[in-house]
Every structure is written in C-alpha cells, then in structure tokens.
Amino acid sequence: MAFKWQVKDWAAETDKKFRQPWREKSEDWRRGPRRWGDIEEDEAFADEPETYSRLFIFGGAGFQSDNNTFLHALRNVKRDYGSDGEMKESAIIKSGKQIVDIINGHSNSAIQSLDIITHGGGRALYLVKNKNGEYSSLTEDIPIADRLEVNLYAGKALKFWESFGSNIGSEATTIDSINYKRFRNASKIELHGCNAADQDAAYFWDSIAVNLSDKLYAAGRKRAVVIAHDGPASPLINGPDTKPEEQDYRWGKRVVYHDGDLLFWTWKKRRISAATINKYLDLKEGSASDYEAVED
Image (cartoon, rainbow, N blue to C red; front, top):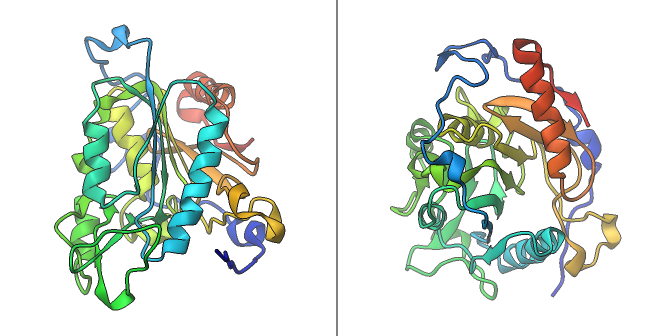
C-alpha cells in the first residue's frame, strides 16, 4: 500500500501566536468568575478504583489509506503506554455517536486516557459513512459524492451551524452527550488529528479541545487535560522517509489545555509524560489567576 503525503514545513505553519481573544481567565463571559477548586468533587471520587482503562479510537475517514495510517499511529501510541492500565482498542470507529457510547459505557472514574485518531478541526472530529449505510473501512473508499457526515461536534451551536449545506447523518452528535464522570481525576484526552485546538476554525465558539477540557473540569476532574494540535498534523514523524509502521502524529506543535485554559505547549515528540503535565498543573495551582502558559 502506498502512503503519499505532501511534505511541508509543519513547524513554520504551526508556529503562530495562539489566540483566545474573547476568553479571560478570571472573567469568562460564558461561565462567570472561576477559581481553582471552585468545583465540588464527587462524593465517591476519593474511592477511585485501582485499575483503569486506556481507550484507543481510530478511523472514520472516507479513504481506506487514511484509516490504515490512523491504525499505524494508534499502535505506536498504544506501545508507548506499555502495560500501564487495561488497553482497550476499538474496531474502526463508525460515528461520533459511537465514540460517545464507548465512553459512556464505562463506569465512573474508569478511564485514565483516551486517544482519538481521526480527521479533526476546531469545530469537530470528522467522520463519514456511506449514504447506503456502509461505514468507514480499512479496505474500501467511500465515494465523495456518497458521503454522509457523522461527526463529533464541539457543541450544539456548532452542530446546528454546520448543518446548513452539509449532509449530516443521525449518528452525528456533540461532546455534550459525553458523561465526563467516566474519566479519572488526572485523566488525559489526546486528539491526534489536524487543528482540533484551532480557535480560528471554531467561528464564535471555543474549539473542541478547549470545550472538552472545560467539561472535564466541570465534572470534577480537576487535573484532567486535553492535548491537541492547533495547526496541521502529519504522520511523518521521521520525515519523508517515515515507514508506514512508524507513522505517528505526536510531533510538531501540540497544546495542552486545563479547564479551558492553555496550560503549556510543546514541540517534543511522542508521549507527553504525566510528570510533565503535573509540573504545569502544580505551577498553575500555585499561581492562581497570574498563571501564563509557557513552552515546555
């Protein structure tokens, strides 16, 4: 199978000033003043189970070559976790609704990490199916003219906005349908597709990465973070000579969000360690309203 990618200067394209023009840390117009520790934890939160799950979700593309690339990337992500937790790899994903169902099918405080490898953007994670009912595949393409969008949107308003002029199927949904109590207190969601943290692409609303981090915190998951690209993402982690089995989106500029705020960003390759995330969470907690994100 041939994997053809246009090689670009990804660093130059993604090295832009991160913009959140209408957000203020202390006075967010959507939710009012908020401080670290404002949210009460679940009564049962102190009794998190010792065992936990790591979820791996991939697919949803119209081209089988994209889905095979996503699968290679998933295997490399999974390999980095080793035996840390129960590894749960989905079959190729069918729709945004199925992503929600997989998450909600777990018990409270069960999910330590969620890695989603799909096409992405600030408005949604993009998935398609065939109008005749066939889903995304590792062996067959879905003709462009026959595609029905079954995306996972950043919010209800964005889904409504996107519905104009789009072929949106009944299995499209929003992140509002997720039960965020299924995640652990110090959990992590990583979105491996392009532009999932791009504020410009989300019109007047926050990106899907920002909104996910907001909702995790609102559910009492006070040390949960979301990792995403705010620009293009490429699987060519080792440059143009990257072999198919080496493909991995965890390089270039990635941004990390906590409670809707930019926590830090990094250009480092592969897994961002828990120790690194905890370092910046501790700095933010100690700085209160004076915290400013920095590059790791």
